[in-house]
Image 1 (cartoon, rainbow, N blue to C red):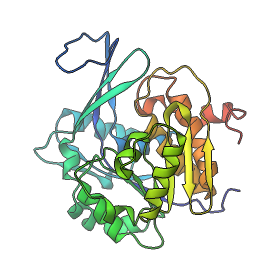
Image 2 (image 1 turned 180 degrees about the vertical axis):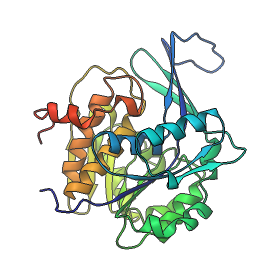
Image 3 (image 1 turned 60 degrees about the vertical axis):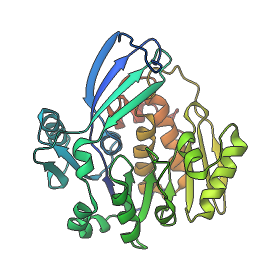
Image 4 (image 1 turned 30 degrees about the vertical axis):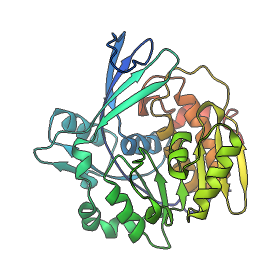
Length: 313
């Protein structure tokens, strides 16, 4: 049941400019190939998640650092057009904006290389300067395209009032995440990130269950694991549920995890139900993979209303 008052959402993360290259196959080491098409757009995990919330009709505050170059200028204009609070969009002098180069093969699979650029300036000092505002929000979401020290500082300073959600992407296998994990209310990895954090090879659903259980023992309160075309796995101390993904023709998986994360936050802020939120987000992400692009592939609120039967629990 939807609550009378929606939870407020603060996303803290990266805003990269995406260069999407369509290829027949993902290149191997030492191989040079030609791309059949190129598309540029707005991305970064934090940006994608925030635009998803806004696009499907939610409200979000977004704290990010962008460059003072042409890419940062384009992104700043995009934020203005979408009515973001510009007080939280920090322009870093003499710093290029983050860039992501995305190779997408004919099966919709992708590889992504990210240059953090200005996102590397989103340090704990920026959080300290904005801490009162950040902690006034009910939900605080971040990822690991910004300095990991920033995520750790957020984990340490969150209060009992805050729901701290971490999308642990990308995982630095040399970093010890123990201090962060014990403060995470909802951890949202994909299979690869789950394997890296738990130290368990993922081959089947039983491995997903065991790896999730291991991270719950480290202090994480809720696990929401995205499994691509296989769906979503949710586990905490009292429930465990697997949610299948609808069968669709995949065009482009880039940004699907961010579409899921943004849709999850939006629905959870309204219903406070982790299973309902995961189910809704699973369907939003499913629609997104049938289209090209990152946040532009996310369905609008009007589209979701028109697809009411699809979005039934």
